[in-house]
Image (cartoon, rainbow, N blue to C red; front, side):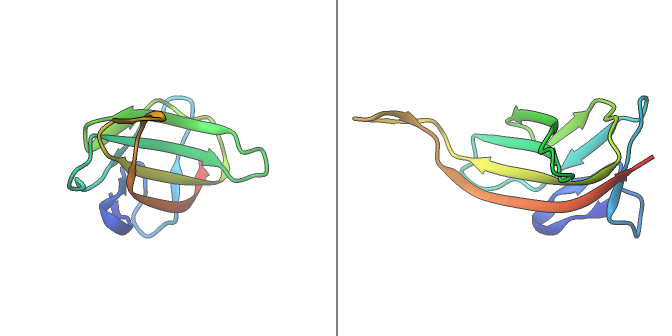
Length: 109
């Protein structure tokens, strides 16, 4: 695993490459450092080929996630958002983002 900024790590990352290897049977893993006050993490890979397709998305209270096989080749990015506990007010419920890390990468076979 290669160390990503702010503690985010992509387990399908090959050392020395700015990319993730994918394929119909290759699963991946993502991990990150805990952020104080975080209730949930919003994790997603988006295609950066102009389509904006969602390649993976999950919301978890863990500091890691396993991805299913992703059948995509091309530029993308990983975003890890730390989200505070649900709050309520006169306008209803809301969540407060605590921090966010984005890593640009390229998926290859």
